Amino acid sequence: MEAGRTNDLPYIKRTKDGRINIKSGNKIDLVVKWTLIILSILTVMAFFFFNYIGLQWDRAIPETAHNLRVMFLEPALNHFSWGEAFYQVGITVGLGVLATVIGAVIALFLALMAAENLSRPWISKSIRAVVAVIRAVPTVLWVLIFAIAAGLGSEAAVLGMLFHSTAYLVKAFSEAFEEVDAGILEALRATGANWWHVVTHGVLPSTFTYILSWVFLRFEINFGVAVAMGAAAGAGGIGFELFMASGFYFDLREVGFITYAILIIAVVLEIISTQLKNRYFPASTNN
Amino acid sequence: MTLLQVKGLGKSYNSETQVLKNVDFEVNAGEFVSIIGPSGAGKSTLLRCINRMVEINEGKVIFDNADVGSLKKKELRKLRTNIGMVFQHYNLVPRLTVIENVLHGRFGYKTTMQGIMGRFTEEEKEHAFMLLKKLGIEDHAYKRCDQLSGGQQQRVGICRALIQEPKLVLCDEPIASLDPNSSKVIMDHLKSITTDMGITCLVNLHQVEVAQDYSDRIIGLRKGEIVFDGPSKLLHEDQINHIYGTELRELITV
Image (tube, rainbow over all chains, first blue to last red; front, side, top):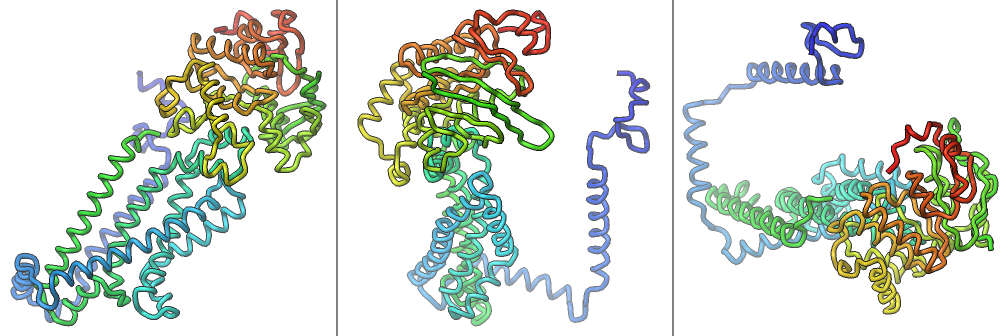
């Protein structure tokens, strides 16, 4: 096409040098660009203001390397046995499972009330608002808040994780529910089905794979959080052993061993969830 | 016998545009009536006012001696069990099997608990298979609905409407997404619902010729008002032009 002909059309946006824009949001691009520039400048400047007193590069680097080598190349158990280690890992997995399963069940019902196509606007809006507030507070803080009532330990950890998991899953589930084709809901309502019928036979079958994926994802997150909670809230499990090994005994070999144990569990969980999804929901990509 | 009476029906979704204006007509039991009109004329809204999938603003709809507009929740469910509905996009649950989708038509007769547990009687299941056989898709009963072609899915949709044992079946552009062959199969089935089973049919159509071929009576809707209502043989070119606001030769007919 001749460039000259389109020159005078008013609806074509152009850059300063006369090239045609294909993005509509010029302002957004500009804001992103300036944010990146300012962040880069701040990062570079920060290096000049660090406190370097006492830092000896020639000692720091080799010793860190030495520590890492001891930790990850010579892992060993000194303060507890293999059986104990498995037991502690089991406790951590248990914390994660408990928080995820209970959270998922509660979230399922709340999400049905929070989905705009299944609920009244004011119910849906109020649940969303509450859930957003709960999600905005980190899990660790919820655990510490519940520790006031339940005391530091596994109860507070499960309650706190449950709280945050529920809020997270309510958002994920309700968005999945809202994706359900409005025609399906209309067709079922037109047969005289009531709300429960529509939910159990229209909405849940259509969104089951999404729900399962979100629960697995949340379980992986909860396993990680449960490790941290073992240390931070005294919930027990492998996280507590890790805290003892690193902060109490300064036993690098044991830290290495525990890290490997956690890594293996995480990989196994990932494999199981992928396998489950592939076996039972091969068609989870379509529709 | 008059099955359905629509009196002075008016509907608007917002204050600016009136979708339906003072719509008046009656449908007798056993009639096959087509509603034609351009897109946006209010055909779909009119159908949905009859089973109150949309709320009625003005006027009355009287179905089987019940005032549809004033029904309570429970009575409305009862009413809807008597009115089957067939959709342009079939609106089946794609991940469930054909037979499950057909049985969804029985929810109106179930209590909450029976529905949740999916408890259907043997008679209902046999009835479902009989209907599938009648529409020629009994082989696919245990297939997932998303594995069927459009024409087959629409037949499942018709089965779902028929298992309700309705007095009236509303069809919202049942053949608009289908090829000419499947369209003919679907229209033949719909026609046989009326002739063989005596169930009244109210069908929204885009294709004027299909409407003329199949229906006893045609209602022409334009900008929310009825501009033609009479036997299909009385629908002539100038009336069609009036309904669509064009010359006939400008219409692409299928």
